[in-house]
Length: 181
Image 1 (cartoon, rainbow, N blue to C red):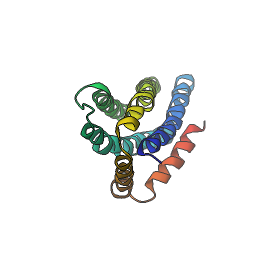
Image 2 (cartoon, helix red, strand yellow; image 1 turned 90 degrees about the vertical axis):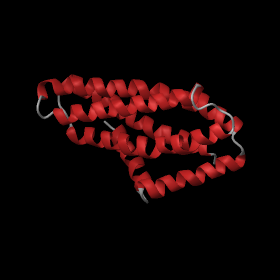
Image 3 (spheres, rainbow, N blue to C red; image 1 turned 45 degrees about the horizontal axis):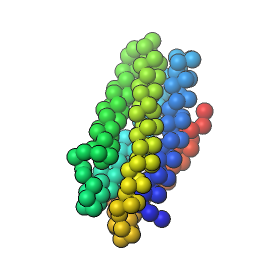
């Protein structure tokens, strides 16, 4: 398996939670019921699986490997991905704040939370498409087999040291749970 294939697989897992987020936004708009438990789980998934695990693999390992092979980091696909990662972080913080505020202003909470969910999905879906269809094919062209192997080892280290043993599987299971309505 190539490192880029692992990242594509993680995108599929993230996509399941985005499906769940879209369903939750519809639920919020239709019922105005804030299902705090589900929203807390989505927030946890985004902060930890998406950012601490997935984005760390890209930012600390994949992007530098691409730069070593001549892909510019300050323009082009890498620069766009980094900017979108930062935008995603901003959106997750805004969602967390809205979730925190939801107990104080329940009459507006459902609408605001739905808007924040929809905005995050609207950012991440095309972001994933760009990585899968532009960045990763580029990576597969410029990275050597030994680069891909080194990246896989680095990704395993991220999961073991930054996330903790078994955490990756827990988030995969959580993604399947959140994808179900």
